[in-house]
Image 1 (cartoon, rainbow, N blue to C red):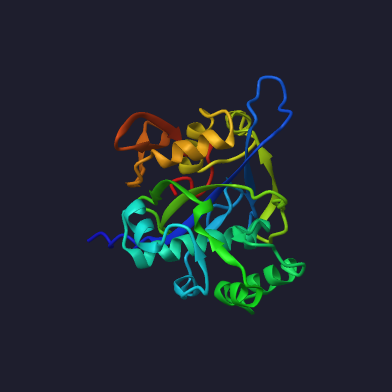
Image 2: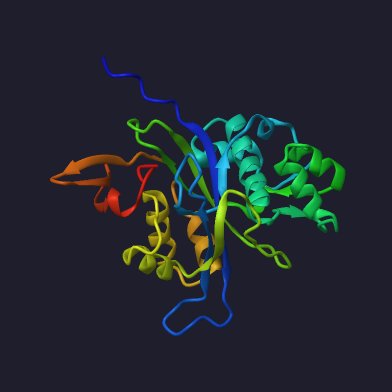
Length: 269
């Protein structure tokens, strides 16, 4: 008898966007922050991804402060219960801070921000404790929901991942100071897709699709506006064999068809 599919772990990822004031010829101002994962990572090694990660137990903590739509609103937006929705928003903000140093919080960030980031990564402090010690307020209003992707049932590692989008707050810079990635930089979406097409970077199907979608917009403001109009429902890709090739397809989009061997290990995520 076949074994039961692994239960997907809730996760959150954030597309950080900004506008290049002087884009190269043929490029729009829109840029997105991408990281190339360390080859030693258990999930999606070498893949180029948006910052993010799994929801952990502390993401269910009650925060001392929260600005913007509450968990119940997010639950309706993300098609899940309010408790999980609140944890997903908290995970999105926490993971973005841990992985690239951008903190979606207010008012003024403390001088010791790097120290709090290190404490958070080392699990010496929880995110709720960081907010309590600094007096910062989580800015849920800076996030927009974009999509929700669930790893196919055949995968041994499964995630139910909400894709958020956020503009980098003024005065903050995303960096590559994380052990989970070997490099990180800003890309024009179409540029990243061109590098993928040449086999120079590896993208999982959800990342590939999301880059295609945001590449249709000229700047960060247009992406955020588009996010408000999107319906967020779970998308579960399928993996199938076509001759000698393994491809990822989407059940509701016959035009989406991407070769797994072009994406690398873990591409069905």
